[in-house]
Amino acid sequence: MSQAESLPAAPIYARLADELGALIGNGQLRAGERLPSVRRLSRQKRISATTAVAALRSLESRGLVEARPQSGYFVKARAPQTREPAITRPPGAARLVGVDNLMVRMIDAAQNPDIAPLGAAAPDPAWFPVQRLQRVIAATARRHPELLVTCCQYYAGLDSLRHQVARHYAALGCAVAQDEVVISNGCTEALNLALGVVATPGDTIAIESPSYYGFLQIIEKRGLKALEIATHPREGLSVDALEHALASRAGRSVKACLLSTSFSNPMGASMPEREKRRLVELCERHGIALIEDDVYADLQHAGPRPLPAKAYDRSGNVMLCSSFTKTLAPGARIGWVFGGRYAEEIRLRKFAASGASPAILQEALAELLRSGGYERHLLKLRRCYAEQVARTAAAVCEYFPAGTRLTQPGGGFVIWLELPGRIDTLALYEKALQQGVTFAPGPLFSASGRYGSFLRLNCGRMWTPGIEHALMRLGQLAQGELAAGRR
Image (cartoon, rainbow, N blue to C red; front, top):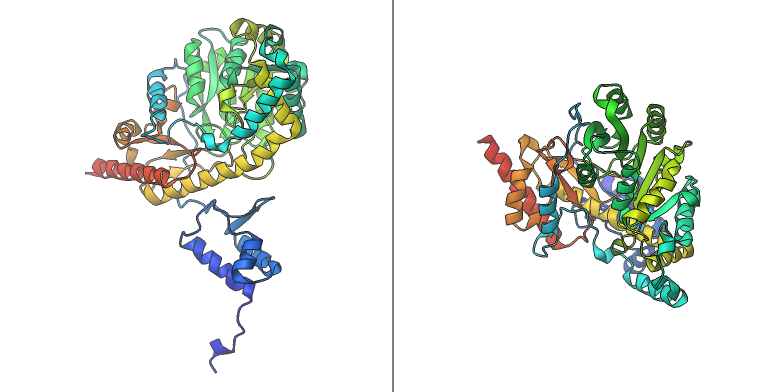
């Protein structure tokens, strides 16, 4: 008898784990996909539930899968075989902004159903609880018909929604008084209101680099200048770099710092808590307001939801802005701003700018928060976005040129790529449009026109063969541009 024949057979659970591991290894089970449930494995393989659980736990110990509470086991995203982009090095001078034309072209392309929507950071409508929203809005209209015909007295927002939003943050460990909450028409209006109380034309606003093009457009329209600050692809804005900038000549006219501290757009970076605390203290010390966009922070892929910088605010100097646009009801256009010590002026500006936001929608969303429906929806949505980001990153690693770098966000649904060989993503964008694919070129995210070889991909659309084919086409175009540049 040979040595191999004398060895005992591997346990059933180990053989099953090896079988599933092989499916993961050869790509039949892809990153973000759910594995069969314990019940299904037991039935298909004619094994006990205990054996099925042991197999799944064995895969988890190997780092191939991850358990998600009340959801099952999912294939874990393998670290891409590429490096992430380096910390950015923007210029030290403040600049006027001009991003309108490119932004409008990209948004227009996103409306074309014949073009693969990898550009604008718009979630797939299929992710949202439309039927539940319909039922809640209809029930709200029946219970509160007066909300259909009144508005002026609610210009700061319904007390019910202001209370629920404040409760949502209090549960995270960020206590905010209800009187500080002003309901807005989406996050963009909230940001405009916040900037309007602290900056006038000609002033400078410190921002991340790269920064969300919506920030740049707001700055442009208000006649302000942008001072770009070095930013790390995982840990966000460098507080050291901001401190250095504020001590420079360019920093003397800075009136506010505008950024996303959790799952920023386009990088997906999140500042560590210690750096958020330092940021709050630095802004307070220099007498500049901190305006925090928190719109992606409820969309962590795993673990606890990150605290906003607002949680460390003790003087009212931080204004937090957010909305339900990325998480619950994009079409409702309901957002909020925590005004801090500027709350009263923000309320007055809100009344003068747009009056009250739709009361019936506010009450319906308050009911969803009150009933726990929002949190239950978020559990599903986070899983969907995590899967989409993992699949998109895997496709980039498979189809894009060797040497491509990409971020690895822990939340949200966008990733930031750096292409090798100084590929011009503006030129690539024109060719991609002709091939029926859109993306967001890197220069769109900079006041100084930087990031010419970078691009942002939207991962918020439901994964389909069409989306994968679009990524493959875009990767092939990038391969062609790289080859042409080497000739």
